Image (cartoon, rainbow, N blue to C red):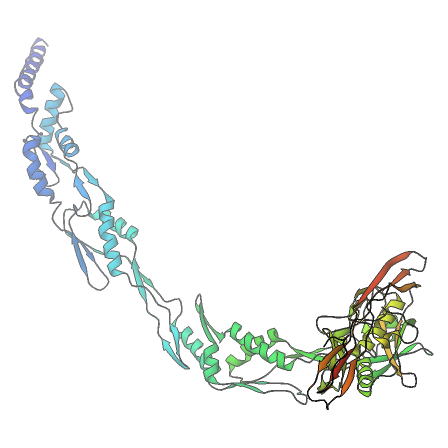
Length: 594
């Protein structure tokens, strides 16, 4: 036992002596048996080993090859792609084995490295942004946009342009592919991850659309009027050249829509609608007071209207299938007052108002105009709440409609004009509305007093004039019942009568006036020279009338006696001098205005 203890002590002294003798000398060196992959670096200081390490790693040597879809090749070194070796961290890693223990343990570790070498890897640092720059340039070079198949319209010629397949490279996917290859020591070839981009619209879809477009343009489009009436226009024919200007080709996702441009086609159909429009004609009636029924005196006629929206849809549906004769969609428009409507339907039961006037002494032309004008109001129906417009129902006054020339007031003159005498009709309608108690919202007096309108005991101011479209006579049917207007000319008395039929609301009308102030003398007569008159001739062309301001009022009460409204109609008649024409040699009187 004594010898064993002595041996151990001697051995410890020997190892300690070796450590104190050689340990400090080995500290600056990488321990023997340390390798950087296949490069032995043991026995060298880190500074001595570094040049060999850099040469061995070859980070600036191109050894990463990217292969493109068309055989393109791009070579990069790891340094090109942002890879670098961390010198301090790598040398620290290599210097640590055999140096991280104390004394005897360190000596044992170094002895173990001699027997079992340790292979270590370098410490890399990677900046992927640098690689992304290179990869983005490659992606841009390889990329090709896809192009959908499409139809080209040149004039009226259609051409199919096939689609083009595209491709693109994902920088992110390529970066993930490159990253593990950066640290490999050997040459690496990588295929670029290329995504194929197929056209959204295939050649087959474009070919289908081309067939549709060709079907549209293969023949003229003929639009027909179903069940045409006499005098109807049409048919309308649009040539293939015209259709080509309306042809609309639109890509919608993976489909190609081919039809006619809706805006252009709607504009065209609107023109047809105006030509085909027929307003319905209401029946005209008279009221039979014995039976209490309406008796048609003219029949009603349905109107019609082109349904532009539905016709457009019909064309867009039929034309692409090769159908080029397409009927327009016409819809019947029923009259507001068909001939079969009854008095009970409209609430017409009794006479509710009468207006009359006399035109004794009128010329034959004025007489004819009065009869023709009054006829326009025979059978007119005014709906509840509707505003009656005299001018609207009278229509155009022209020779073509049968009116003659007679005297009319224009400005400060009475002259010959087509339709003279129509104000006799207006005046009579005004009196009927006045007596029936309807609200009168527009009424205009004449410029000067007209003797016709004071015949029969009517005082000044019980008249009304019109001059379309500026001056009108209007009243409102403010009752819940329809109003039927009848007119009658009594030839023996030269009397015009307006009768209003409806359902009585029990209204009463109290007439106020007319009253008027002091007449204003017409002034000196006016003489106008007419060289076409015989020598010394003179003739009166207008009578003199005093100026006058007349007031006509009324109080309208309901069935309980409550006042509904009060009206005052003021007529300011200007003084109207007598007017003469004279020929050569005649000398006007000294008190005249030549």
